[in-house]
Every structure is written in structure tokens, then in C-alpha cells.
Length: 107
Image (cartoon, rainbow, N blue to C red; front, side):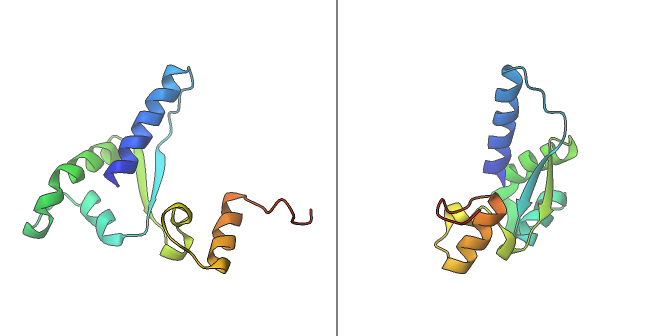
């Protein structure tokens, strides 16, 4: 989540330099409920000590409303198209959610 938050903050800054202001929160979808809970919950435990810096970074942007983090089921996670080897049906389903169509498909 820290990596995507960093990318979104950079993208917002880049768009601003082009004269395009984006004032709304950017939505981050995460299929890991534990990661969301750790990012939103200010209480730390020994098990989360190694990710404390990332948590502070994400929490800072959550509280300043730069990003909004929500849970999405794994089967609905569109990012999996780019990060995982998927079966045919799942690939087609997620591709259609992105609006990708086969050039040979009837219109």
C-alpha cells in the first residue's frame, strides 16, 4: 500500500504541475483486510514493528484525505491482471472490468 500511495501522490503532483488540479481523495483498493486494519489503526504490536514507517506514511495520507483505502475481494482485484498468472475466465472477466475488448469481438 505504501508503494501505490507514493505513486498516487507523485501522480497528483505531476498533474498539478500540468495545471490539472485533483482535489478529491484518490481511492486505493486493497484485498488484504489485515493491511487495511494496520494502516487505519494507530495501535502497533510487536508483529507490526517492521512495517511501522510504511504505516505512518499511509496513515498520514489517509488522515489528510489524500487517499481513501477500501477493501475489495480478491476475485474483484483488477490489479491482478498485471501481477498474476490468471486462468482464461478470470482474465476475461477482469479485462472486461477495465473495458478491454478483443479486436475480433463482434460489436
